[in-house]
Amino acid sequence: MNFMLNRMNSFAIVIIVAMAGSCKSSKNTTADSKADGKPATLTESKTPLPENNYRVIVSFISIGGGTDSEAYAKLKDYISRKDEVGVAISKEEIRWGREGEVDVCFKLKEMDSSDADAFVNGLKKTFEGNNLVQITENTPALHQSRPALQGE
Image 1 (tube, rainbow, N blue to C red):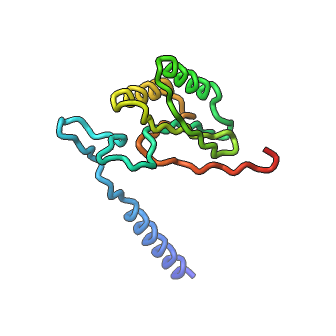
Image 2 (cartoon, helix red, strand yellow):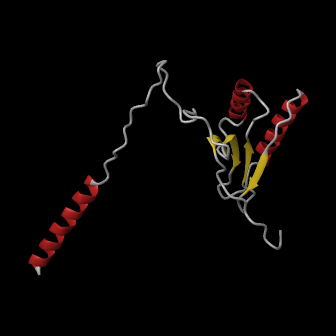
Image 3 (cartoon, rainbow, N blue to C red):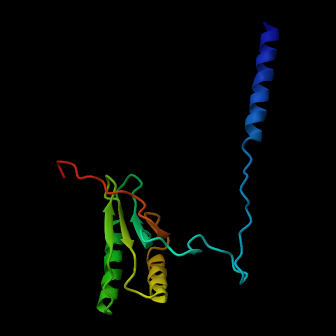
């Protein structure tokens, strides 16, 4: 009996050591730098964007309590202020969640690149610190539309 317990303990130790050794990360944790010495960011486009990419996507997410309706109102206000200046901004909305989650997608083809960058930076400042709003740049649509249920 003692022999079996010792053998099981030895086997358990070998398994634990093997699992601990396999947890090492192979990622390089140093940041890449651009030629000007500044660190590269994830949102920078290194190649021309494909036609199906959006310049910026504003995602209103939920963590079990619904989306932030005040933040969505802020986005509508931000867009309407740009419309007042004479820039009609086109957008697509993709509703994808059960609690009102939605992606508002902008290609920003009606703007030159510096105006588009200013628009995106303004969005980031508007929603800074709001964990229910995520801003993603230079990517295809993140979600597919949720089909409408019969009761909706």
